[in-house]
Length: 133
Image (tube, rainbow, N blue to C red; front, side, top):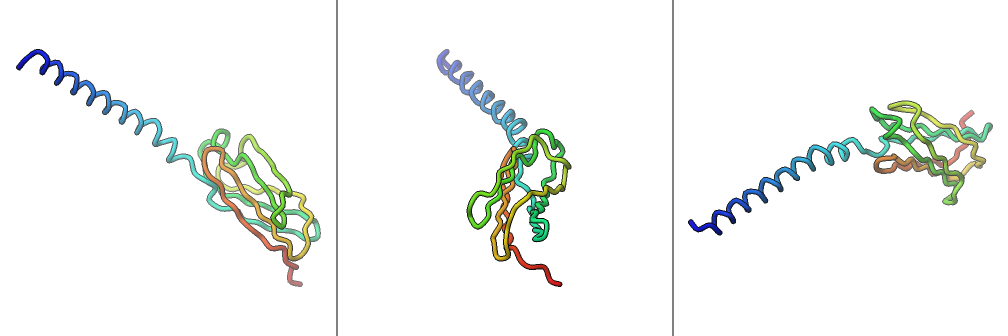
């Protein structure tokens, strides 16, 4: 074997080792972050006609509610913006509710989108109805 062939084999082995190392780092560092990042599990809406309040219950399970949390809630009424609220953490690591003042009438459509600080959104809609008496 000539000297160039030996150097070429060493170079090829070095490239393979470097690629393997980079792949391992990617799997150890990037993939766990992606697995942890997830959108809200559910968004449930309730509306109280007499108090004109919207109750938004969000399920978003996280082990780090100060760094992976619901950072924004956007409200639309009949397709038009009715409120946008930002947060720096979530009050509970699993399920929590926010109450908002929203003036609505029977037949109005309320749409709420919850945004995860790491990844994804979840939207829910509600048509305001008269409570059965």
